[in-house]
Length: 205
Image 1 (tube, helix red, strand yellow):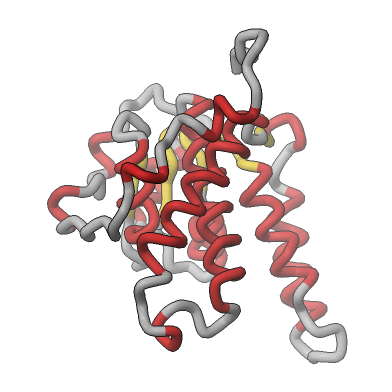
Image 2: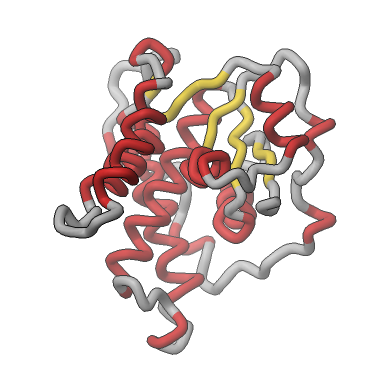
């Protein structure tokens, strides 16, 4: 990853997207306009996995064409996805009878990811992701009825989710990798900011 030119500030990274250019919500595009075809992924392309990919594979619900696509390519594991997996382990209630087993499953998964294969978004990507997440939280969610936003945590939860999705998206773009994700809604929105980014979407099997 090439370091940013000298003289830039965090304001330059935030200014990559003008909030005033997004005064209203972005329409959702049809499936036919989105990248769902595993055969379109170049054979020499590295891939990065959204957290949903790890989870669906653990559940045995990752479609076979997606498994074949991933297994045939170099995988760049995102520090963001690793953090989200660790969060899921930390959230488990210690007194619940299934916690030890579920934590062990997550620990075994994380143990398959070498530290040398983990990449993190740059400081520039972090700042840009914050701007994108803020724009999308405002345009896509604040206009909805309160009960339709996010019953799990309201606006704070929405912003965190959007920030993490933007970090994964921008991190994959920095690495020149194809981001594999089942999050059709947010990836559709993120591609409006960088149509040149590479994403492969899928529905769970």
